[in-house]
Amino acid sequence: MLRRLLCPAIVAVALLQQATHAESIPTIRYDIVAETYAEGFEIPWALEFLPDGRLLVTERQGTIRIVSPDGSVSEPIDGVPPVRARGQGGLMDIVLHPDFANNQLVYLSYSEPGVGDGDDTIGYTVIDRARLTGLALTDLERVYEVDAEFYSRRGHHFGSRIVFDADGFLYFTIGDRGQRPLAQSVETPNGKVHRLHDDGRIPADNPFAEQPGAITSIWSYG
Image: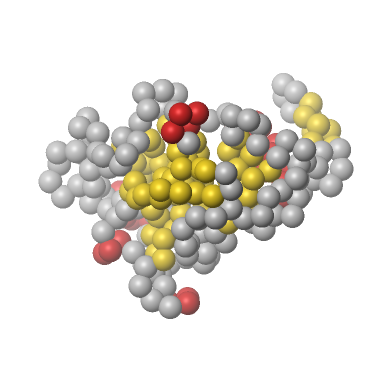
C-alpha cells in the first residue's frame, strides 16, 4: 500500500505552523478541531510519528527535532548530514523503516551540496538512512544518489516524498529540477517516481532495469 496516512499529517503540519487557538474546521465527513500542539519551528517540511507517540519533524534548513506527546520540542538532534538549503532545497522527507521497532532505521531525502561555494553550490536530491539512537542519527549510509552530471545550481523542484509499500519496496519522488522536458526522458532521474529495495539495490522487475541508457531506478515518469 503506497498511501501514507494523510489526515493526521495534514492536521499536524497545520498545528506546527499556524494554529494559535482551538479552531473547528468543517469537512465533508468530519469536523476537525485544530489546536496548538507544538511551536517554534523554522520551515517544518515533514513529520513522522514514532511508535512511542513522539514525533519527528524535519526543518528545511537541515535540522530534525523530536516532539514529545506533551508538545515539548527537543533541540536539533545530532548526526544530520549537511544539506543545500537554497531555494526549495534542503532537508525534506523522513520516514521509518517498516521494521523500525527492530532496526531503528529512518530514511531521509534532502538536497545534497555538491562542488562550489555559497550560492554557486550545485545540488541534487539524495536518499540516506541512519539509525535513530536517542537524540542522534548514527550509522548514516547512502541509499540513492545520481551521477555528478545531473547536479545543478537550480534552486527548485527537488521533490521529495518517501514511502514503503506492503512488500517493503522503497518509493520516492524527484522533481524535474526546473527542467520540465527532462521528466519525459528515462535517461534522466528528473521528474520521476523511483523504486528501490530498502538498501538501495535496484529491483530486477523495475520497468527499465534492462533498458540500455535508462535510469534503472525509475518506476514511473511523465
